[in-house]
Length: 270
Image (cartoon, one colour):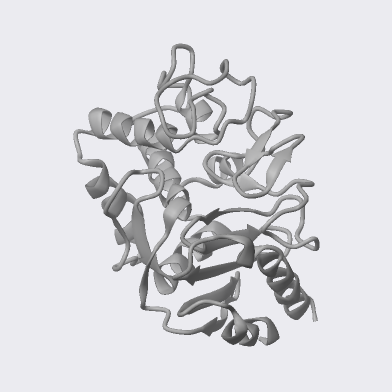
């Protein structure tokens, strides 16, 4: 693919990528087995583990979690009011979309307590083993502490396109806007009105500027990480892409990521 060849010009030391559709892997770039820090892309696989816990009945979406009155769903959707990096409330429940890594730590602790299984082990058994993600590991906080490879995340993306880990209904809910109409910030991309989010997945909606492409459907969802990583799924195109680098997110990535993703969409649409 033309877009993947452009990765050789990126201002990074190493980069790996893959594009997958419902027909399988379309193309790859770089060493797809190399393990990278994911930063906040961690939230995608952690959210999936929490959703498996919901499916198994260990917790429910309306299980109380976080500040009084908040639930698992509020935490997954960044609607609990918890601050970014602390357990203090910065807003009322479902008043604002406050992006909270601390909320994902609360979720991991809840699943661990209710299942009786250390969360890192739960994530491995619930998500990694069934999908064959042999290089993925949670080595730090549940909000940003995982490491993985493009090969592993390709398997994760393929499951997003054809859900097997969780029911189609729960998968659809996860990629549907939860607590609609909430305003908030996307780190690095400013305030959006509204700032749409699903159950762990950022939803593109009409956000601009954004790390996805202008041509992405409004239903596109995924996450990017400060480690220089991103994964998106466009359900309208039935396609997904994973890009992992070794350079922290910064000015170099904007508008490079958006332009790259647009070229990738043009390749897919050709």
